[in-house]
Length: 312
Image (cartoon, rainbow, N blue to C red; front, side, top):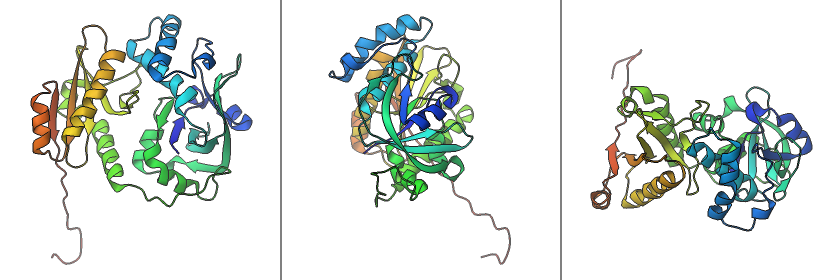
């Protein structure tokens, strides 16, 4: 079972209708029924819809079209029956949790026509009660985001108000996952004051909104996607809370390949950056033959300040 954040229209415009009628959905601005493309893999699916999206959005960048295609793939095939959906309700700071009941269907002429049937639970989940990493991950403008790593926290927030057929999982939250997300959020929040911020900007969509945090790809979400200030280069950033290994290099190369093929404009270079607490010898050997990937370490500072009572 996976967990997803799904926006119900821009600014949750159609949230009330979706909650009342029991569905999640997205729009494409094209009117393209995806039903004929449900039996193919993601590469074939993306190829089938990309040209139609580009014609309907002639001013959109290659990266924006890629994100549209990813969103349609997720609503049509990636999201599975019994997955859990977290959606803003349209009321400030409130979200609802639902369970997916059925496969893709196209509601022609209706708002958010690419739909999945959902049973919504009765409980309101308040954003203020979430951990900071979950607040940030669930609060972005990206239409569909994978929140599976936050599953235990989401179930805890819902309490007894879970959708029918869902039982609370005894699985504990992964503290390592939380630490990695806190590192990611710290870096994004303080981007302008970092060494990276002097050369790169966080990747934005055509409306100027930041979409470079947890940038969604066919091979998983990229922690941070940035673009050089002169526009000549895209930077894939992968964060590791502890030691990075040679496997991390392969992970970054997969992301770089996706960005080169699906996002980069002609002539735009793609580089990778791994940020971790420490490395190992296998990582250094792997980096020796991966000249387009850099490695940085980070340091956590912890200070105690005496503010009262006896000095130790």
